[in-house]
Length: 167
Length: 419
Ligand code: SF4
Image (cartoon, rainbow over all chains, first blue to last red; front, side, top):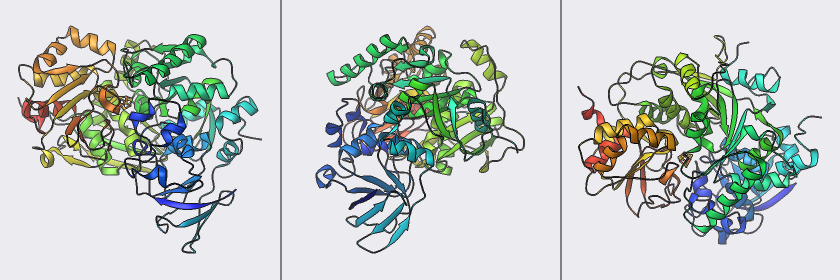
């Protein structure tokens, strides 16, 4: 799958409280409503700035903090197509795959706010269309590709009536 | 080749000879969700089109984060949890029972060598009980409820050998804050931590949980400790007479072995807005505070309240300070009442709230105002964590928080401990 969009640049250690504050997550299961508050402590205008298909680009340790799955879900519902970061916190990474949000782990130092990017999820290649720089990500483990291909873990379990991680 | 604790537990639960880097499908011994994560897990469970949880005796849901409910949105989610628990015959810990990470060990749901998952990041707490326990999201929780299994990448392990004797007035919380400051907030990402050495053995099992609880604040997947007689007795006292201790092999392969001597450690404080922004107390003493919090899954246990009460006994909190105390569980509260700890704290000026998460995560029970400083025994000080992104949160031990509540500013608790 090839994705194209604009980079919204954030720094290191973007925690789940910044992605979606605890004060909202407990209130509702309505992800559209939560999506309006995505990243608002870091950028109050973020939700309105995003064009469908844009990327969140961050530094190290994206998604650290709580295990709230509202974080990747709210990002998906804010119409972000993928998160690209130098590294991810472990639980966020799993939750993203489980809920069907593509995550790309790659050195993001050559990506600035507003750069146009093209991301090939199959090969892990990220092309910065603004600067012409190409970077290649670590491939996802096979297990995660299977889950993403099934549309997330819930549909994986439904489809296979349990885990089907090996042939 | 020798194995670490986590490699052994994942081998035993997957039937594979698991080594760091492998991906395994492992059986889980117990599964837990709280009120911030269970509603989404119930939704995902329905999407999986599974009728029944794998084993109702091995699943619990805990209403602790916003308990009692502060608004009708939360009430609807709590209701959903109650209905699901009734339908599935699983354990429900309703409001007032306590914080999930206190209830799981206290009610005998965790034993040595177990594999436990919880939809809460601080599930790593039970590493202190020699269990591999880790936090997952709601969909993982649903998958484990449905199948009794979950996949794991076997992590490498960083071993922290802590030797020496903690000085008076310096506690497990200071030790773990110090270690996080040393390795940073992502220093152990994708790794497991093993905490060992005489400074760890000397801690009570309750204090060990404070250390394992914060493994996630260095990014770790688990914060494991070796088993010993103290643990065996503790588990037996909490209904777990089965005993399957797991030691690392002497020739286990570690990513890193870090050695520390804690003999000269000062009380430590994590400053806003990251947990690894740690200073010794001498550098932050004198910072004015408006709110002090004692509680949470990190430091809301009986011995924490006991330490705070020993400092607050016969004294009053500063007129500019609110002190909020949230005991970690109903059992802790009852014991603290029997010991007279609660009267001591209330006489000193504390507001005692329902056992549970209290004000830790900003849903209720003490949201600070703009520009205010809070000193708390919790594990996170992120901007906005307590419900106001214009407040400043400092993290410290119960002793430091109690001393600061009296002084109206961050204060060194060691003056209360010199004989
Ligand atoms: S006390 Fe705080 S850190 Fe612990 S489970 Fe509750 S909200 Fe999370």
